[in-house]
Image (tube, rainbow, N blue to C red; front, side, top):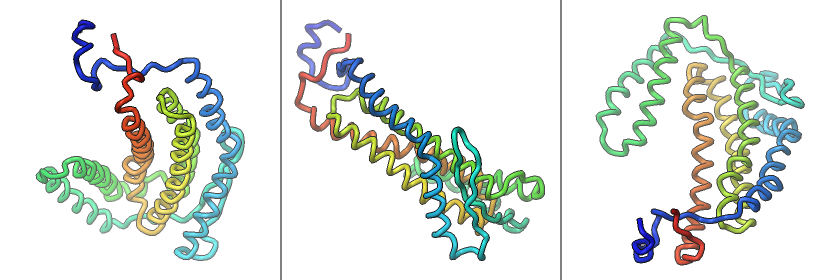
Length: 259
């Protein structure tokens, strides 16, 4: 496209770029995002211990005395804390009912034409749950995991997520022409949302595995696990970019043509 043509077309998303200083971005990343992430290496023992104390306090009324224990295991440079709890294995009848319900939904859901994105998600849930149900029907005594295994996996997974959230948000937001204050607020909001959401989800998942069935372990991990974390990370990033876009809508000096 020639410069003459570019001079008369409207400012829109095509052929535009925001020019920012690479040095400023690297400085902000090294001073803000990276230390934030590295602090998790030293703080995760205290954070996971607090999470477990909260989870134990919420779950205690639903279990017999001494059924829940906070234990610690070595992890990276310190100890990680998690909840040890009993497991509930599904009966053959329970697994059969789950498989039949999943089969029915797998036939029904593809026919529905409205809100396809929602039903695609539900189809994935049903398919994974169907495989899990069939496994417990034919190989009920070969399931290699218990609730405490998932508890350990979940906590270690969350520590990794809490470590990478500042890095991911730093790489995404720090190059943008928003104020440093708004960037730091967005990073903090994302981290604390991840912390609170991860804690609440931990409590709910442990309750399901110990009171409903281990049959749902696969769905909890593959559908409602790390995938959901990236959804809210992208969502918070989108809010930040939307607010920035509205602010810069008429500021043409911030945009340059991409050659």
